[in-house]
Length: 248
Ligand code: PGA
Image 1 (cartoon, protein in one colour):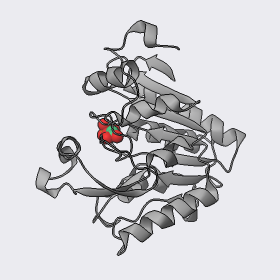
Image 2: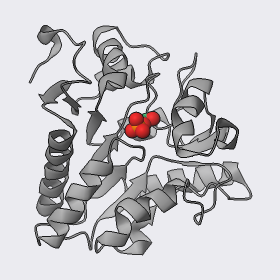
Image 3: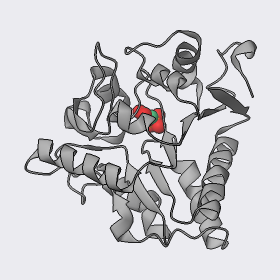
């Protein structure tokens, strides 16, 4: 696991976006695993800039999003599909048929999870998977738990996660209690994983993830078993990490 510490959010976004651009320029039909939340917004802005400057062409790219809230339709501004169009897809030349996001309003959620895994099998492996990290160490909506689920599934959001995400909703009661999320094995199958972490609020979990062993109670710690993971953290997020644990 490599950690690259950069000055600030702006730099983190730029470094991550540059890695994606290189990937697409090397392999125009790359499969990207994408994340939502506050952390990747700057990276998406950069990608839009690079696209507008003619530095990258998304026309053959395929994307898979990590997760979607159960019960929110694509017209709901809090749904992740809405977020992705708003922050990235509406501004680039991606083929809309090549965008995959779990359907949180599917009538049969179990079937929807299976459908998503079949698509991941068909188009995978993901070339670059972007991840954020929850303050509790979750990746996607794989929450701390005795057991982690391997494949795409319906997950119950922890109270900590619902509190953290309440900032996007009118009040916490409006935060969905469930989401469809790719599982740990779906994530670990990616060829390369980039985990982004920004801000002081992430400093304790970044330290725990790096400095304790592997634990299902810190889902991101599982990434230590992957051969190609890079954490791009800004100084604030990395401020509790001991220097000797920074390989980069
Ligand atoms: P954030 O969320 O980017 O909004 O901090 C990260 C996550 O919960 O995975």
